[in-house]
Image (cartoon, rainbow, N blue to C red; front, side, top):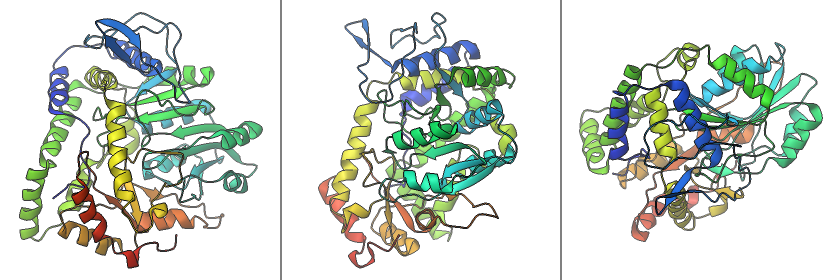
Length: 442
């Protein structure tokens, strides 16, 4: 049985993460190191000599005077000026900081691409602001410029746009609209990170990157915000310093939890687990999905208002230095493209029209997702619903109009893909998707 997702981290990194919890460290120094590392686009070592990574993708942000150190040095650097980035416990934490720093008037409207994790719109409401969903184009998984403009009112003050499933789409038209109206433009790239070459849109006020448990190059937590407005960044830093630091013990418990889950989701162990749980008449999928969430079962706002511990930042710096992130993402995307080519209507895959799709998730529309996941599981593929995502609820005085978003939340099924899957395996998976069910209206 192929598990629905895997953790993008190996056992050497998990061992390093656990060892880091027992080492003393300075959270501020580690934070500065991670921020410079991210701003510089990583470091590669050639023959023992440091060399900057060749970063050509749009959105590259480089710190001036940032320190570069060898990839095998496991201590924080303390030289160089501040980077235009802020490390945080999570993307949720960074959004909370940004909204506090921005001090938007209560009752202001925040336009949000209509599908995101529910915590994001909850944070908006916690600040006395009104989230307004803007429906998606199924091809790009982003609203069109016309949709953004139509949703805006005189009360609009900010935009939060999320790149879903590994898609990357330029924000130039939206950025122009935001600049015209003076809106704060926040870009959520939590599902879009593809390695050192991608730093988000240079025209966004802030781009958010997550390294949570299921994300690319996971550090089992942590986030980096690229903040292009110096005033906003300074205010966020000042607020961040008032928060307590996550304890090393809390990080150790997190590492132990996800090491256990990583073991349980290796294919042989997972197959046995599914069989055993099925014999007991329980639903294995719901139990695992409820466990994986980074802040599952917590009081959200107190939980996110912490600075990351030295151990978490140490691991995050190690993950950012990994030399093969971009290659692993390319291999993942290649497997997805090979599967998509076998599907009855490849153009209907969510995000198929995005300029870049790295397939963090490969999601397909089906009229009966429960029946589809049952057939896939019977064939050895434990597909899952994107249960961590939700459709942003419309304000009471605004009509519901996010049809594509609602359809995605109700009908999407995420296919379990792994690097190295053979053509025969992909043929079997594609055959389970009934052509007569394909292409249900979105």
